[in-house]
Image 1: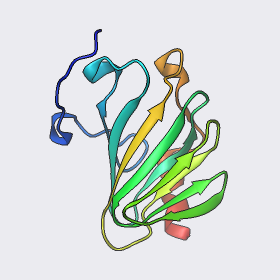
Image 2: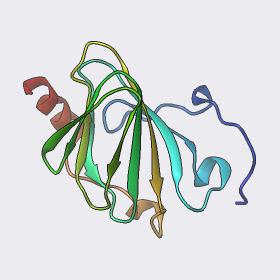
Image 3: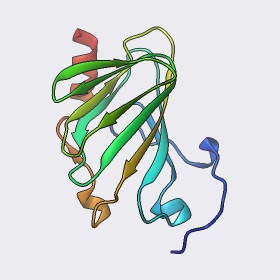
Image 4: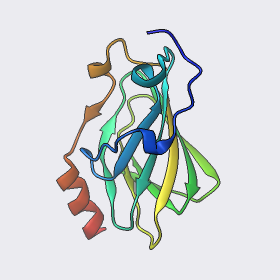
Length: 137
C-alpha cells in the first residue's frame, strides 16, 4: 500500500475496546499506508482503563488532550495532566487508567513499526484484570 494524503476523522474508524477503553488508530499502515509508525486516539471514561501491555519494537508517545491520565510504567504510576506528554520507552509495560471524574482524551504515536503487525504488541493482562486493578486502586 502506498502512503496517501487522506484525512481520517476519529468517527471514520470503529472503536477497538478489546483492551478496555476506546482506542482508534487513525493513521497507520491499514488506513494510510504509513511505514514508520501509527497515530491514534484513546478515550477513557472515568474508571476505565487500557490493559497493561508493551511494545517490543516501538516507543509510544502519549499526549493528553483533556482530563488526567494515570499511566503505570512497569508498575510505577505516572500522572499525566492535560496539555502534557509522556514517552513510554520500548519494552516498558504500561497500563492507562482514568482515575478522575471527567473523560480523558489522549493522542498516541508509536514508532518504529514492528517487523510484522502481530509482533508489535504484547498483552500482559486482560481488560478484565485491568478493570479490577483500576477499581481497587
